[in-house]
Length: 362
View 1 (cartoon, rainbow, N blue to C red):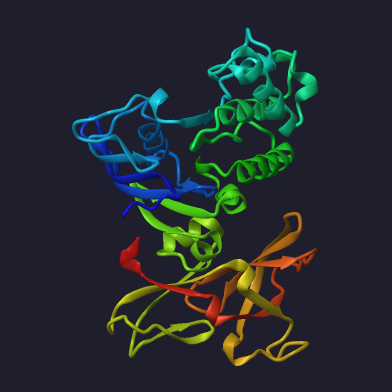
View 2 (view 1 turned 120 degrees about the vertical axis):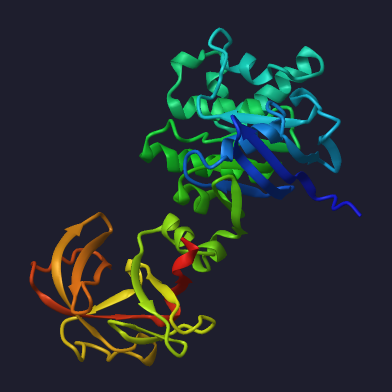
């Protein structure tokens, strides 16, 4: 039975160029009103996957389904214009010789009055109705992006594909435009596949993140779950800085500067990495701590010597050389905290915030 809420489904998509497999068995589905971010480093196959979904490139294997209908398979390939899919790219692709209204109305069906009514409605929703007679070169980058969004949504596509649509905007403008875009997409109820290489953007925009690496999707989940339960060390490192303490499992335990960590499921002699995010380390001024004593979850305090400290905006980053097998750790602290080099401090860690991975996972 077909799930009527699924608007786009990719089934075991494969694509090669010059004998190199760029997309390797990608399967993913998008539901109405859901924003899915295809996230990964440059060259991992994200944009190729998007182009295959749009129909502008054809896969070597697998199938593309839109609204329960096969659009592309082994013996059938529907052209892009027949799929009911909207496209947005990072260069916005506005027609320079058309004004804003004509850009938004381009490709719409119906009478001239119906097209203009839809164009006015979309421009009003993106806050640009008063610029309907302007030309793209007269607009700011953020305004051009909103025109491109209005044009992409004007035909009421069942699916909208977005390839790095915010990368051309400066950082301060980007957040405002992303928030406004997300609000409009939710109001339209469109299924969205957004390609990005920026974890922060994926966390901000997505209902679902599909993390991609070397042509394959390695993990799919809600932003909270994929951040707090990464599938491997590389997945953890993609979303934030990490500290890594390497050790050898012995009797389901691995020694660290903070005492022995439980590492069940690994055979004796296995090389493991214990991964700790900088914000999950706690700093004390002496071994007992000035304030509440460490809880059992925080384990044994470990002595560290400050190497350097820097203020990085909302937080301070402090780097430590630990008294344990040349281990160095980074700690983030809210606000301004800039201890001098060679200052001795004590660190503790919430063990339930750590991840354990086999070194083979790299």
